Length: 578
Image (cartoon, rainbow, N blue to C red):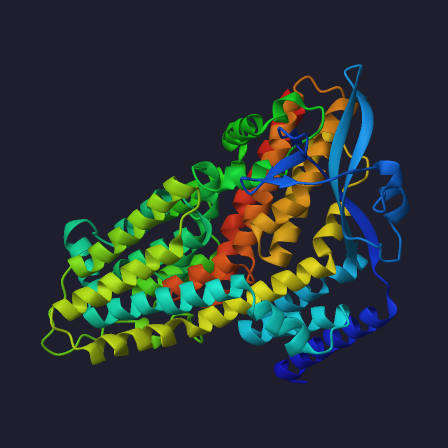
């Protein structure tokens, strides 16, 4: 049997199993309980803050609630409602108080819930073809959910969403167009030559520039990967830095840096999930934001990840996987930036410049659009709390095209450059859209809910941070999102950490909860960073011109070593100080 036949049999078996489970195994329902930091307005109406806006609600007593965990948890029957707000009368410090919770009905199929993600990741690993692999995972999830109209019930609703439209606008039209214009004007090459003459003296300094830009662009996630990747690629290519090295540096200085230099949207988003009734240091939004920033020194994975990429940049790594070492040796010895048989996500249209005859590139054609992009992204972040990257990339694209026209380039050449840019990133954009789709499918099948339920057992307190790290790694790797993992894990992890601290009579419960918080933060970042279905993984590959699975396989050893070191640190600190 040929390898191709074996891969096809694995794919077919996965689809058959998904169909059998979807038809014969009923979903198990459970209730996710989120504690709310409730306030009262001048008219006596109850509300809580969600995405910086008041969200009003009406609550029913728990005994009358449809989504009462005592009745719903473990049931095979779908409840009449999917969301409900409940009130609970209790004693806090000897005083009667009313606590409020949001109950959300969730369902899963046990370990079968992980099937879509497992199929996609396994096929990616075996075939090195992300598009059919992601489609395989999507089809497996659709069969599990008994949605047999794959186009009408799965692909079209996902691709017609605002999120998908944003991906097409930003990463296909704006990012691709900007990269194409830079390729046509020679701006990227001019920048590379400028940096090489004045700052870069070889692979080390080229990588160090990449690392420093990753720190500077601390917004994290897609913003960081796109900005750093597109900026440093021409420099790194000129200095024979392998695409695997560059993709790892770009990816590992995105979310890890965002959690360390957290002057971005992360604290405001996460604080809403960590309210725990009766915990004084999490009582208000200001308290929770303070708690977030207090956890930064304990986000050990982020620290080791950023340190590891710095040491790799100066070629003094504390640990180096065999695949990445081979990539480094290959690129230095032969100048071959990709492995044999690689399929880079950045197409040949963007691999060099295609300057029209008689047109003279200038460094300002790179610096001015890039500067305006950064200024608009930072300015809109300071003004509204969230960077408007569509505005930023849109203005940069118009400025780059306008400068080319003003310097005498014909409109036909500008449009041709724009077309080349779109062709250069179309594969990455397709993979990104499919990754979003399978992330939504994995969320619907309830894989994260099932995994979180497995933590409900009695465990030694000093192992809780590591167990939270492992569970969030699996969830984020399976769904390709750290923020989605936070929404699933924090409502369980924080009350669980508080209960464990009380049950063991820990002298420093706040420190213990900080360790658990940091473990959820970092486990989610690691899982997202290493997942082949994560948007940041895809974008890191696309913007550095790397093969997606080459990036995944060369990144995992270094990231895993950082995760192991972080687990040791959390366990030691919990055991000796909490």
